Amino acid sequence: MTAGRTDVRPDGTVPFRATFGRSVGLFAAFRKEQSDPAFFYGKLAHDTIAQLRSYTPLDGRLVVDVGGGPGYFADALRAEGARCLCVDSDAHEMTLHGREADVHAVQGSALDLPLRSGSVDVCFSSNVLEHVPDRIRMADEMVRVTRPGGLVYLSYTLWLSPWGGHETSPWHYLGGSYAAERFTRKNGHRPKNDFGRSMYAAHAKEMLRWVRGRSDVDVVDVRPRYLPTWMKPIVHVPLLREVITWNLLIVLRRR
Ligand SMILES: C[S@@+](CC[C@H](N)C(=O)[O-])C[C@H]1O[C@@H](n2cnc3c(N)ncnc32)[C@H](O)[C@@H]1O
Image (tube, rainbow, N blue to C red; front, top):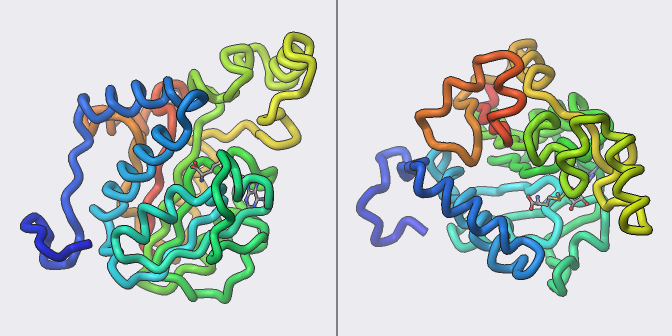
């Protein structure tokens, strides 16, 4: 919350520094994702919401977390005073890691958000776009439910990044279907993130073209979510950006 903070800007946002050390810390924490998910997702959520606060004040704001899963981001949002609603299509995901289902979570699809147009202050989504078969539709839905002047925070893992194939990486570089079949052979079950079923090839190019085609949003920021600020220009370099950006963050303000 803002009380007692000395670094709050007049518009209620708080500066965020994407340093090299912060990136190292995030990647180090990622190594504990399997053994200590609460630690990793708690740290990631804290970092992400601090980043979100550099674009919009959160205290008292209505935020929808699209594909919020077990609700780590909802916790971090509420700690900043936001009113948060999670929408996720999978009831099982909402209780992952032994977590209680959030009382402010609803089961619903990102492709058809169960919300009125222009009804939320902030529409937030982390690492969901690569899991839906129609990325443009999900992004359109996020803009639709955001009120004029409100913020869209959309971040997703790029298919050609080293983690693009999730647990089937790096074999996705030889093709998503091949990587999924190889994983199935080795592990005796299909991967959770199964190419063509629950994971798709999401590229930067497609979504940046979508942004340019919309006349009802202003671009606030486009950056590699986890990387230091000095690496920001990479998002303007075709092909290279698909590999190096890792996770693309698009921040928009609804007109
Ligand atoms: C990789 S998890 C991300 C969870 C959380 N947002 C995070 O960043 O840690 C992907 C989430 O998206 C949800 N999801 C996948 N397809 C969806 C859809 N069509 N509508 C809503 N949620 C969806 C999954 O159930 C899962 O909780």
